[in-house]
Length: 149
Figure 1 (tube, rainbow, N blue to C red):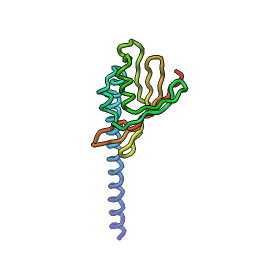
Figure 2: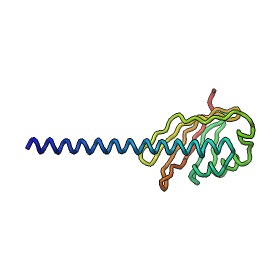
Figure 3: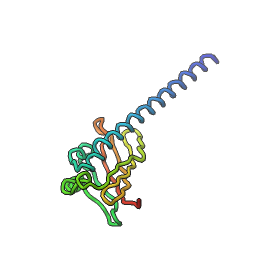
Figure 4: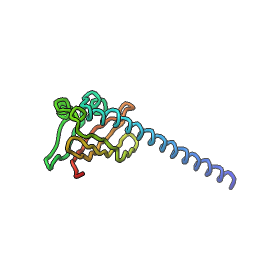
Protein backbone atom coordinates (compact mmCIF):
# COMPACT_ATOMS: atom_id res chain seq x y z
CA UNK A 1 0.00 0.00 0.00
CA UNK A 2 2.84 2.40 0.86
CA UNK A 3 4.46 1.61 -2.48
CA UNK A 4 1.23 2.33 -4.36
CA UNK A 5 0.74 5.62 -2.50
CA UNK A 6 4.37 6.65 -3.06
CA UNK A 7 4.15 5.79 -6.78
CA UNK A 8 0.92 7.81 -7.16
CA UNK A 9 2.43 10.77 -5.29
CA UNK A 10 5.59 10.72 -7.42
CA UNK A 11 3.55 10.50 -10.64
CA UNK A 12 1.40 13.46 -9.66
CA UNK A 13 4.46 15.47 -8.66
CA UNK A 14 6.12 14.77 -12.02
CA UNK A 15 2.97 15.78 -13.91
CA UNK A 16 2.73 19.06 -11.99
CA UNK A 17 6.42 19.83 -12.62
CA UNK A 18 6.02 19.04 -16.32
CA UNK A 19 2.96 21.32 -16.53
CA UNK A 20 4.84 24.14 -14.78
CA UNK A 21 7.76 23.79 -17.18
CA UNK A 22 5.37 23.81 -20.14
CA UNK A 23 3.73 27.00 -18.82
CA UNK A 24 7.16 28.64 -18.37
CA UNK A 25 8.08 27.67 -21.94
CA UNK A 26 4.80 29.12 -23.29
CA UNK A 27 5.32 32.34 -21.30
CA UNK A 28 8.87 32.63 -22.63
CA UNK A 29 7.69 32.09 -26.21
CA UNK A 30 4.93 34.66 -25.73
CA UNK A 31 7.37 37.19 -24.26
CA UNK A 32 9.66 36.66 -27.23
CA UNK A 33 6.74 37.08 -29.65
CA UNK A 34 5.74 40.36 -27.97
CA UNK A 35 9.35 41.57 -27.98
CA UNK A 36 9.63 40.78 -31.69
CA UNK A 37 6.33 42.58 -32.44
CA UNK A 38 7.49 45.63 -30.50
CA UNK A 39 10.78 45.78 -32.38
CA UNK A 40 9.46 44.91 -35.86
CA UNK A 41 6.17 46.82 -35.85
CA UNK A 42 5.87 49.25 -32.94
CA UNK A 43 9.31 50.88 -32.70
CA UNK A 44 9.88 50.63 -36.47
CA UNK A 45 6.46 52.15 -37.15
CA UNK A 46 7.02 55.07 -34.79
CA UNK A 47 10.56 55.72 -36.06
CA UNK A 48 9.70 55.58 -39.75
CA UNK A 49 6.17 57.00 -39.48
CA UNK A 50 4.90 53.72 -40.96
CA UNK A 51 1.19 53.55 -40.10
CA UNK A 52 0.91 50.12 -41.77
CA UNK A 53 3.50 48.66 -39.40
CA UNK A 54 1.70 50.32 -36.47
CA UNK A 55 -1.69 49.15 -37.73
CA UNK A 56 -0.29 45.61 -37.73
CA UNK A 57 0.33 45.59 -33.97
CA UNK A 58 -2.66 47.66 -32.73
CA UNK A 59 -6.14 46.19 -32.32
CA UNK A 60 -8.63 48.42 -34.20
CA UNK A 61 -10.44 49.46 -30.98
CA UNK A 62 -7.30 50.55 -29.14
CA UNK A 63 -7.51 53.70 -27.02
CA UNK A 64 -4.52 55.82 -25.99
CA UNK A 65 -4.36 57.80 -22.73
CA UNK A 66 -1.83 59.69 -20.65
CA UNK A 67 -0.25 63.07 -20.33
CA UNK A 68 2.33 64.94 -22.36
CA UNK A 69 4.03 67.99 -20.86
CA UNK A 70 1.41 67.93 -18.10
CA UNK A 71 -1.49 68.05 -20.55
CA UNK A 72 -4.05 65.25 -20.82
CA UNK A 73 -3.56 62.95 -23.79
CA UNK A 74 -6.40 60.80 -25.10
CA UNK A 75 -6.92 59.53 -28.62
CA UNK A 76 -8.57 56.81 -30.57
CA UNK A 77 -6.33 54.62 -32.70
CA UNK A 78 -7.51 56.39 -35.86
CA UNK A 79 -6.62 59.80 -34.38
CA UNK A 80 -3.20 58.51 -33.33
CA UNK A 81 -2.43 56.95 -36.74
CA UNK A 82 -3.59 60.13 -38.50
CA UNK A 83 -1.18 62.14 -36.33
CA UNK A 84 1.68 59.77 -37.18
CA UNK A 85 0.81 59.97 -40.90
CA UNK A 86 0.85 63.78 -40.87
CA UNK A 87 3.99 64.46 -38.85
CA UNK A 88 7.62 64.32 -39.84
CA UNK A 89 8.94 60.95 -38.76
CA UNK A 90 11.83 60.79 -36.31
CA UNK A 91 13.80 59.08 -39.09
CA UNK A 92 13.26 61.99 -41.48
CA UNK A 93 13.84 64.62 -38.78
CA UNK A 94 17.33 63.41 -37.99
CA UNK A 95 16.56 63.71 -34.28
CA UNK A 96 17.43 60.92 -31.84
CA UNK A 97 15.13 57.94 -31.54
CA UNK A 98 15.46 54.94 -29.28
CA UNK A 99 12.86 52.39 -28.24
CA UNK A 100 13.72 50.26 -25.21
CA UNK A 101 11.73 47.38 -23.78
CA UNK A 102 11.87 47.56 -19.99
CA UNK A 103 9.63 44.62 -19.05
CA UNK A 104 7.14 42.20 -20.56
CA UNK A 105 4.77 40.40 -18.19
CA UNK A 106 2.56 37.64 -19.62
CA UNK A 107 -0.36 35.90 -17.91
CA UNK A 108 -2.30 33.50 -20.14
CA UNK A 109 -3.64 35.54 -23.08
CA UNK A 110 -2.89 39.00 -21.65
CA UNK A 111 0.34 40.90 -21.21
CA UNK A 112 1.73 44.29 -20.29
CA UNK A 113 4.92 45.74 -21.71
CA UNK A 114 6.65 48.73 -20.19
CA UNK A 115 8.71 50.53 -22.80
CA UNK A 116 10.72 53.73 -22.97
CA UNK A 117 10.70 55.78 -26.16
CA UNK A 118 13.06 58.68 -26.79
CA UNK A 119 11.96 60.72 -29.78
CA UNK A 120 12.20 64.34 -30.78
CA UNK A 121 12.70 66.19 -27.49
CA UNK A 122 10.57 63.75 -25.49
CA UNK A 123 11.25 60.81 -23.23
CA UNK A 124 8.14 58.67 -22.93
CA UNK A 125 7.40 55.90 -20.48
CA UNK A 126 4.64 53.75 -21.90
CA UNK A 127 2.54 50.88 -20.66
CA UNK A 128 1.20 48.80 -23.53
CA UNK A 129 -1.56 46.28 -22.80
CA UNK A 130 -1.56 43.25 -25.08
CA UNK A 131 -4.13 40.56 -25.77
CA UNK A 132 -3.51 37.41 -27.79
CA UNK A 133 -6.18 37.50 -30.49
CA UNK A 134 -6.31 34.77 -33.14
CA UNK A 135 -2.87 33.62 -32.00
CA UNK A 136 -1.36 37.13 -32.48
CA UNK A 137 -0.27 39.51 -29.74
CA UNK A 138 -1.90 42.90 -30.33
CA UNK A 139 -1.83 46.17 -28.39
CA UNK A 140 -5.29 46.87 -27.00
CA UNK A 141 -4.44 49.91 -24.85
CA UNK A 142 -1.60 52.42 -24.69
CA UNK A 143 -0.79 54.63 -21.69
CA UNK A 144 1.91 57.27 -22.12
CA UNK A 145 3.62 59.96 -20.07
CA UNK A 146 6.68 62.07 -20.68
CA UNK A 147 9.40 61.88 -18.07
CA UNK A 148 12.62 63.70 -17.30
CA UNK A 149 15.66 62.18 -18.94
